[in-house]
Length: 314
Image 1 (cartoon, one colour):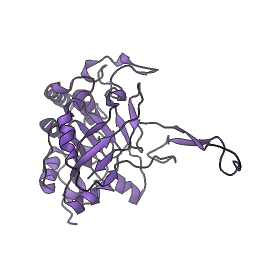
Image 2 (cartoon, helix red, strand yellow; image 1 turned 180 degrees about the horizontal axis):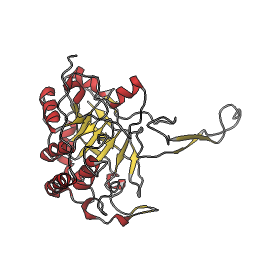
Image 3 (cartoon, helix red, strand yellow; image 1 turned 135 degrees about the vertical axis):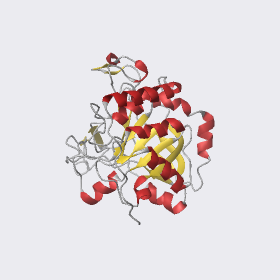
Image 4 (cartoon, rainbow, N blue to C red; image 1 turned 45 degrees about the vertical axis):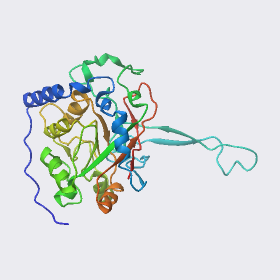
């Protein structure tokens, strides 16, 4: 692996500059203003075309195991409790082993998908829906129920550490639009309309090799200006192996600018904290970085997101 020099740091954005970027991306994404947002691009014809990506029938998970131990990036881990009779006391007759789970869906450890009601910005949700539609009982619109039939399309993995010749991007590093375009060229493909774009920064590999850290404070992700690339290609989903947003934020006064732009302005469902360490070597070996991708959120009618286990089918 040849290590390349780290690219120049992209510029920080002022609140005014971010506002200009927001309005530009919002205008360019007017086609995705409905309750399903950009998922409307996943027409039956595009799903059929994506199915033609399947050549070997191999399936690969894009999710990490659910974390049940506290750590610096997971102070509120999922809780798994066994219910009913356990095996050692159920020596005769019929019994059932059962489970109970609770979790913080939007933490910094578990793989999850963000619904369009997840991001409240300037008093509204995506499409100008009033923030008051999210109540103590749940979201009355734009919930993850919008994806109840699943999200199925052509997945594309752009591997930025591979492009730069490093095992992972360091916390605080940014993926730019130029990085995404260069990764396309290096991987001999082109991101197209309706694609499910997955961007690897190596967060999971770094965590596995160096141990967890306070990812809420420092992590690699996309620079807000990289969302111009997504608008150009009219992708319908964005997923990453980190939070998608860089920390510390590059934008004055906005801690999660990529979430604001992707979810609120562009109507993209976001997948955070996936893992691509199983998929990337398969793509490398097969010499192709596109595949059928199947995402099936739980049926949680009023929820702002869901734990998720996306599957790549190659």
